[in-house]
Image 1 (cartoon, rainbow, N blue to C red):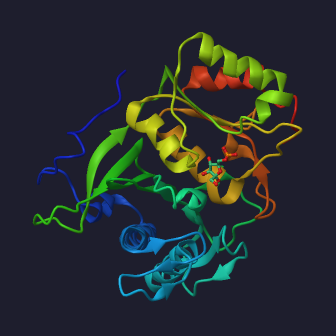
Image 2 (image 1 turned 45 degrees about the horizontal axis):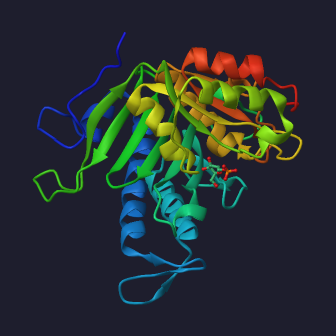
Amino acid sequence: GSALRMSSTSQVDSAQPTLEEWISFAEPKLQKTMIAMFAACKEIAYKIRTASCDKMACFNEFGDEQLAIDVLANNVIFENLKASGACATASSEETPVEDPMGGSGYSVAFDPLDGSSIIDTNFAVGTIFGVWPGDRLVGITGRQLSAAGMAVYGPRTTMTVAIEGAEYAHEFLLVDDFSGRHGQWVKTNTFSTIEDGKLFAPGNLRGTQDNPGYNQLFNYYLDNKYQLRYTGGMVPDVNQLMVKGKGIFVNPASPSASAKLRVLYEVAPIGYLIEKAGGKSSDGEKSVLDIPISTTEVRSQVAYGAVGEVDRFEELVGTKMYTP
Ligand code: P6P
């Protein structure tokens, strides 16, 4: 079936619920945790647009040196989670230890600013987060996730989330048009299907040199005239699969390039979003939601996207060159 699509993201009308209206079905502490993450990402979106970042640091409109934008984003998220009262533990890819948040209910692992190496080129970057019940973030898997989300700081600021108790993934737009809904997160899309389709985002091209299976997969895409869409920022590169409702994103490991992406902070939360949006995730042999998160350091190769496309990844690339 075709993905459920609401009106285009450029128009916002009163029929579309705000985040607070939409999320009212969820368990109260999960609501608080999610609302805290949306509030943090709204603040990060503003800081990114107003800070002029050179390679080392950022300077605000008054020329005061700010913390490097990803450290700043890190702090904003910790502060909002502490203020929520619903968060027991939080852990950031920037500071990968489990920090007590003083609350109770859920624990949040996040990558505050994924793709900070492409901020200076003004490419879209994002925030990735996963919400687990309880107070620990190791000895878990993605199967236990209560919710996950990723904010996309592009020409528009959007947040794609999935949450237990609701089917599919859901996109919210941060309204920034000085209308009556300025500053509100408003629901703009529902993502329910990712079809086999000629769109691919191939990470880690070094892997094609010493991973015969990846070479075969890459040639399959070329021979079948797939559209290549890859920015080097996983958040927009994955978000396009749900918005377009087709395609595949791969970041394979190979002898010359070991697995790069962290399971706790990136791979599992995005795997949850993709599977709730009707797609498939894989580490070459199984869903990324089944990768044991024994430490904050666990990394994995990934493929996300349409079932048939990910099946092909498992068939051609699999785990021949990489032991999960
Ligand atoms: P490569 C960004 O640093 C990141 O973590 C992901 O956002 C992105 O998909 C990946 O690394 C890019 O890796 O090897 O293609 O540059």
